[in-house]
Figure 1: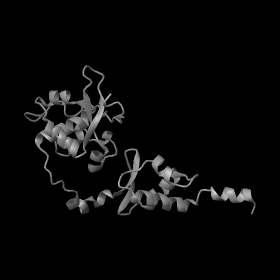
Figure 2 (figure 1 turned 90 degrees about the vertical axis):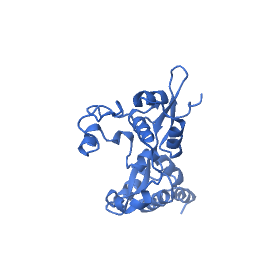
Figure 3 (figure 1 turned 180 degrees about the vertical axis):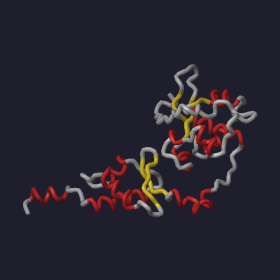
Figure 4 (figure 1 turned 30 degrees about the horizontal axis):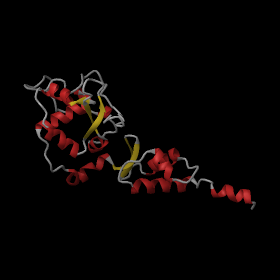
Length: 218
């Protein structure tokens, strides 16, 4: 074999079956979802990440775990029909207050939203403790500052929040009709209901901000 051919073989991408195994190993060992770019950075030069991911996804179809999209990344997740087996492990022992639930719902459906906007919708002030608890749970995070006087920070839900409730993006949040069909909302507003917590039923345009936080503290 010539020196030229030997050099080329050293940089040839491994067979697809081996690429599939490599991607599987990378995702299995990662504690958080990984993007295509992150996976590609760990693979030998010339690997086809998209094709390898497709192979892994097909291999796990119908299994106890499946390869799923998680935001911009990929991760192994328990199959939806087996979620009941994880019930004990997934129970949140920290009970959220009514104020925290209302605040979280407003942020999810109106993000990015400021503290004053949350207070306007709820009709009462929001305590720092409520915001701090949601930040500590990593269900919300700071978004871009508003280009308004004082440049107030905004709040948005996190990928951790979406993962917890089995959603790929905020666009997967149920609409008013879905909540009513599930018996979670009455057909008529309940006394004392919070106006504006949910978008209009026909809008179907729940915001899904992918805000960078690079200018958060400018």
